Image (cartoon, rainbow, N blue to C red; front, side):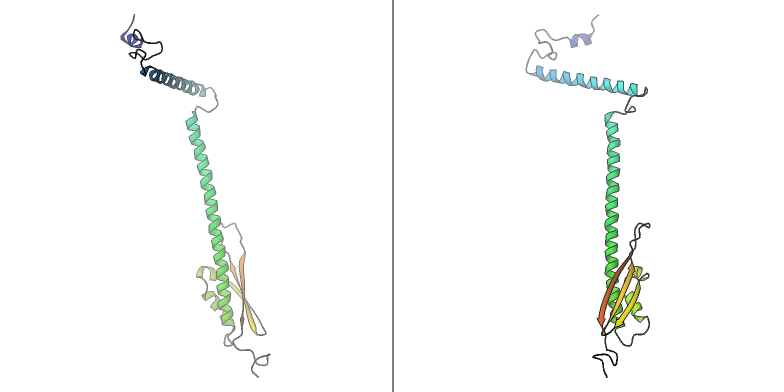
Length: 194
């Protein structure tokens, strides 16, 4: 028994086989055939996906995920790896900047301490206090100064601990030495006052 759906599916009299109903072989025929082929291919893909999903319970590879879902998981892993790499580069750049700043502050402290140590009126550790005052507070607390005076000049060496962002790293100390001429030469030394 023929239904109205069967009648719609039969080609019209005079139409070429494979042409869309009602086109009678006109220019719309090839476009309609292309659409029919695309619909058939979509149905085949859907049937294949259904078979894959049905076979997943039986231990099929892919675990029941279609290609799009597996690709999303791969993209997430690639993104996480890229973010981790960017984070590592950012921490390394920040650590390099902090190390450079510590070296610069060691030079500033050594210069201020040497300038203070050259004055004859300076007693004891006044030069160390002047060196620490010239530095940033968070680096000055762990700074150390040593003086080596002889002849016409005084050399002061400043040692500053380089802070580490990652606590397990030990980056050592930044060391800078500065030599300044004495303000007044000691009596009895060559070039000094008699």
